[in-house]
Length: 175
Image (tube, rainbow, N blue to C red):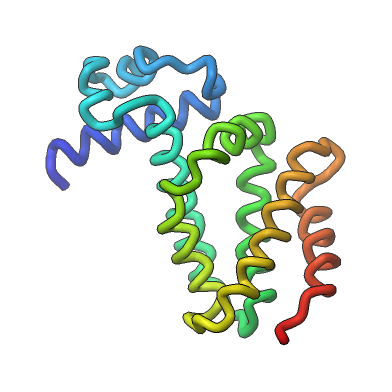
C-alpha cells in the first residue's frame, strides 16, 4: 500500500470513528484531520467534502461486512440470499440507529455514487441471472422499506426486522 493510500485509509478510519461516536453533523473536517494526524488540507486532497468521506466510509464498512457475510452464504434463491445478508446488515444499521438515520438522510439523494456497489449486490442476489434483476429490484425495495421503518421504530430490533422482512417476502414470488 502506497503512502498516499495509507493516509487516505487513516483519514477514512478516523472519520468513520468520529461520525459514529459524535455524529456526522457534529464532526468537523478539522476534527477528522486531527484524529488522523494530518493537515486539514490533506483531508480535502483525498476527499472533496465531508459527505464524500461519509459515502466512502459507508462503502468500506459495507464491503467488509458483505465480504464476511458472503463466506457463510449457502443460499440457493434470491430471497434466501437477501435474508442471509439482511441478518448481517440490519444489526449493522440498528446498532447505531441515530447515526444510521443521518447516514440515510445524507446519502438518500446521493445514491448514484453507491450505484456500482448496489448493482453488484443485486447481481449477487440474482445469482448473475440478468432476467431476475427486476425481481431483485422489488426484493431490494422491500428490504430498504423494512429497514427504514425499523430505524424509525425504537421497539424494533434485528430479529423483529428479519421477521417482518420474511413476512413481506412471502408475498413476492418469481413469475
